[in-house]
Amino acid sequence: QLQLERSQKLSLVGQVAAGVAHELKNPLASIKGAVEIISDANTAENDRSEFREILFREIKRMDGTVTEFLEFARPKPTRLERIDLSQLLLSSLRQLETQASKDSIHIADEIETGVVIEGDREKLHQLILNIVLNAIQASKADTKISVRLRNRANSVEMTFCDQGQGISPSDLERVFEPFFTTRASGSGLGLAIAKSIVDAHGGSIEIQSEEQIGTTVTVSLPQRSEVQR
Image (cartoon, rainbow, N blue to C red; front, side, top):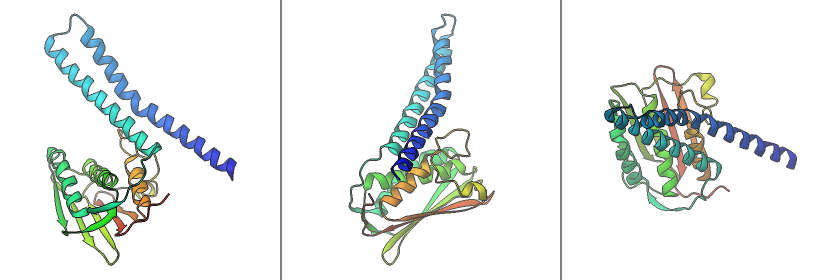
């Protein structure tokens, strides 16, 4: 048993290392090319400005990638407090409205007010961002993402429904696997982190999807959580 656990940990370390290398390779190549152009005495000043912006963008992208990997590999302890999930969900959606509108995507919400649970505010905020960002990236222009929050008997339910490209049945079985992604860019950790957050709260997360129709993510959380170690 001990040998099996050690083998699994080493396998995960190898996956993390390969994932980090893959995700940093492209921005590093962009940074190298931008530095070479900026350093060239023959480069026009307006071109220098353009490539400085590329430098900052790629550095920010690398920083985000490293942060995401660290959050997966070394998650912070889950700290429970009474939180107004209705307000947290609304503020999280407002944070993403600008990004969604840039892609001509409308976020429509149907949020029951006064939904209070015991949870980790920071982690639940991250959970919402990860799911909605995935929905935005999968959505087509001029479509809608519907977000709903409802009280159940002893739990609460959040649903996130997009009208995007959907997920094939074979890929649907793997969406929660670390480093699995169907996009050209992206670490494949968003949904893996989301599931770990839901698991830590003793809840459940389910995904239903049809190709070219859309995807619905349903998150159920107990009103009184017990932290899963």
